[in-house]
Length: 215
Image (cartoon, rainbow, N blue to C red; front, side, top):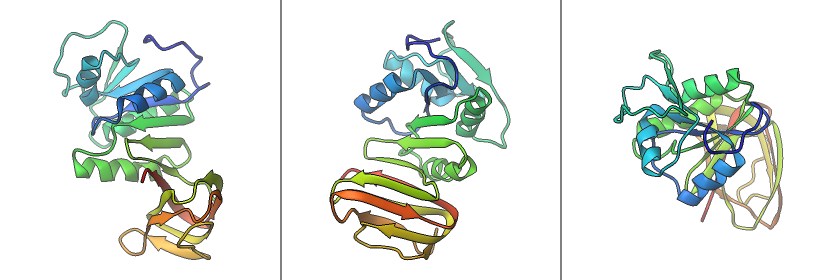
């Protein structure tokens, strides 16, 4: 284990550090406090070492590691399967260990193809509570019925992957009333909270991702 306090596997959320753009250091450290078990994709390991952060597990094909000085307190898992991304490998590993709640950082920015694919990966793991954080946003797959309090003007975007139907919203500036959204067609980006109160979102079928953004 790393220096994080020990918890039994599955009791608290896990943290995955991908290999995209770094988020604010405060976001990372806050998530580390909340998520005692950390998995790093191999491309992020050396970057974490520079921050003097030690993950519990490093996963991937391990070809991206610049440093061959392996830490004895870190478990290195080499997986050569080219049919899955390193992020998927991390999710599969954590799910096999009983984790149902997974937070992710460094999964956006830098390469656009990786960002798009990482967001699309949420659809594959829709039965797991995965939340992606960066310095500006957090995103996650919505349950069929969702309610949460937001301040007036909070920026919210609804992203179908690739289609969601029967969407109804309350307390958004641009409401939907039993309507569909489809990726590449009609999307629900750049909406905002109408009043400081509860926002309600429901939909009938498909996969719908909510992105909460800082203005």
